Length: 231
Image (cartoon, rainbow, N blue to C red; front, side):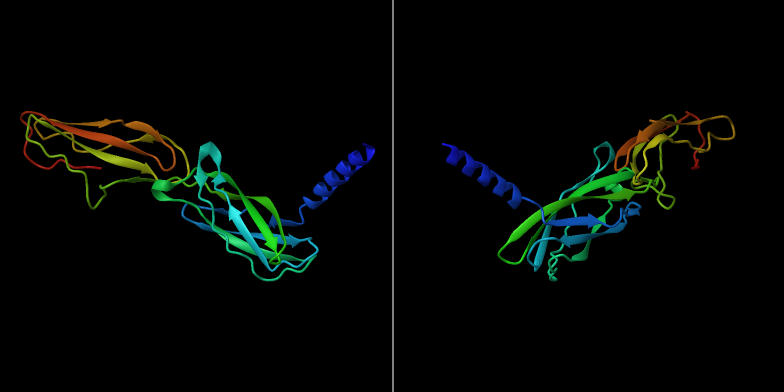
């Protein structure tokens, strides 16, 4: 009975030794960039195994950032240059920061990379954490309409007309107080008015999100025919 107990302990110790990590990766920096930028992440592969690595392959997770924003996982090419026992080598990959309608919130984004080194017959694995930083850049666009293609509200006197426009946060900063104002001519020379209603006139937008705004023009009954413009 004692002999069986000792054998069981020896087997358990052998498993612990065999699971000891003998490869690791260390990121050399935490790069920063604006929306739309492509960042390069460089890291060091450390071979502390008893054999040379002839191939190291990788898999990566999505990067997680503030308020549940994420950046897609990068694709990392295999490292096929031999890394001798006890030596290190640098490798790199790129991360694309989303922009436009897919923009993400500024802040730190963390991802994991798993790596496996081999000599064709033996394999060892590990993983490391890395960080990129997205700079805070405000940005807003309006779908369809622009200075060269203005929003036009056309109706006969005594009637009203409405159109909508979509406002999008294409930057990386939370826009907490978007205000829409106008200086459109208020009426004709004899006191007949054009009334402009904007709904909503104030709102907030987080990166990558949009808001539909309605513009309504109401013409007085005796409003002179013509063009009433502004911005």
